[in-house]
Length: 96
Image 1 (tube, helix red, strand yellow):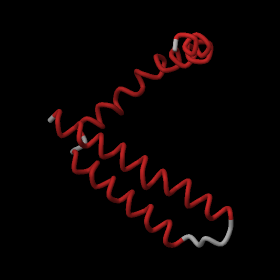
Image 2: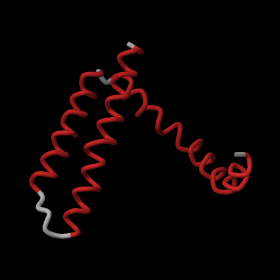
Image 3: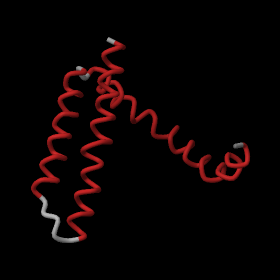
């Protein structure tokens, strides 16, 4: 584990500096996110799942590009975004 950290330290250290530079600009975004009601996040998760289902249903499977579009957007809209919004809503429910 330490060898992996040492090998990646040259790549990670510049990112830490960039994250520290961007953190003051991201604080208002975090404040707004904390004020968002959890129901809005749950609604966004449901809408994202519906959009993924509509995308997979509407886009035809007749070319490699369309299938790639279905997979890329389907995973993003059907798994990643609803998962993140669901976890965010759960955390905000526990905080408030």
